[in-house]
Length: 369
Image (cartoon, rainbow, N blue to C red):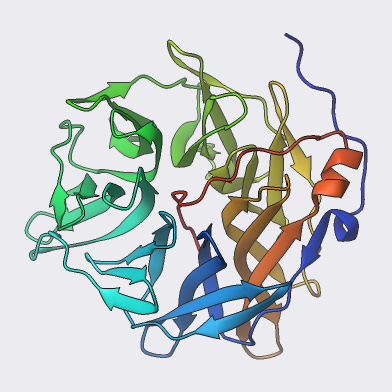
């Protein structure tokens, strides 16, 4: 099968519309949908640290909602009308009914780290992945925890090494789970892909490229094809990053062609992936038949402005909502603003990307700053 043709050229303002958000000095890290509402969470940047912030969508306008403070929120998922939000050092929030509440987790007391991805297979089967670092020896390892409707428990993982972590998770059921991340092995950063069959975790080999290091940030299942896709970045010896995309073939992982830009991909949902490019632009790409194609995004405000996308949600009409942060250039300081972009399904079809995919409530996520 030949790669899909490149899309026809379109304008950024027609393809992506920036939606109005509250004027907060905040970063949005991910976006999810319940049965009735779209939510985006993140954190306010203060002089002393971070403060949790939650926004919900009414039409094309975003409004702030009250939420307990757990600092940075770094991962979300939404089974039905519920929402799970996770952050640093074992902090977790659960929204069910009319409000949010804190939930205890088995995060080790003598450690620090973050939850970086979440997935769910029903209200009583929620998963979280990330990394944890023991203060005693500074060894960082991957972490998987699971909610059974009553409590969170930690699942055993393969012994990959002294410094590795997980960043994203997806699956079709509790017997078909994929988790991705990174590991430092022989002094090099390499991609990590694990699969859980209901009994054991198995690590799968990933493609390598001479002179390049690999890290995976997120993983998703494409609803209309069942393909498993993972995104992240490759790094040159000079430290320059470029987007990395991989696909599961049924027997192994292969590299997928992506635009050759400097930057990285932070999140993927279905056929849409987002991140940032080194030219201070938000980065978005759409998966065609066998290759990813760059989707133009709005330009930053001014020569020193910067747009970064951290999370993406595929919509039932075939469009998408992406969230992140807009860094505004000011004479003496940098101001942050929550960034929400809405990708038009009509414009995607005009560019040669047609169709929609099944509504997927309760997706996993990953974040990056």
